[in-house]
Image (cartoon, rainbow over the protein chains, first blue to last red):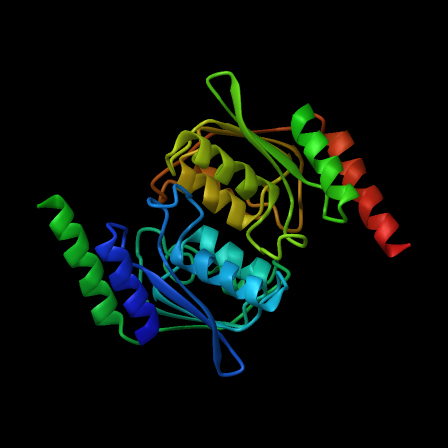
Length: 142
Length: 142
């Protein structure tokens, strides 16, 4: 999660909403990603999707599996991407009560109607991740 | 929708689940896309995301707006990508009772808790789109 938080800080410096993610499998990092929606002009370029795409490219397989660490509770798009990639486990830092689809608004990972389910944990470095977000939005409003 | 169906046929020929999409805005086509998950080794490369990414690149803006035509009811990831891109309207051909997130399992586009909502229509060329899918899966099982 410390690596994901580093990615989130880098996103903030680039003027992007500060969220970072890392995909780990068999004890090694496959790929990391920062939110790049604005600079890449790509609405799908959330940190999670960037990291999952990197992991899939590295493995040469669109099914990556592995654990994904994210600094903010993922949105619907990112939870859906985790289902597509057959992610084995999600760990996120801070909750997103407005758009979170792992716990807050939806509980996608536990939906028995979908063809893939995975456990979700939350909490590590939550305070640091959420301070980074609130500082970012405060500085933009200022 | 005829253009989206052409993309779906091209996906089938490439060994991909045959789904196609087009993003249209102000009466002109911005981008089209076919499902490319396997060949691109990218779990996010569903037809809808491919078309939305293309539209965003063309407009130079991650908020594309516009109408998206898709041959199959979109999954959670793709509905989430439409929220991110601020799509104005979704038209899909065939329902997907196992993973559809526009009508079947979820109704994402009408969720008042999310920060963007848009109308959904279904039905045009539904029979052609669903025959293409069932032929594809039948030939893979055979």
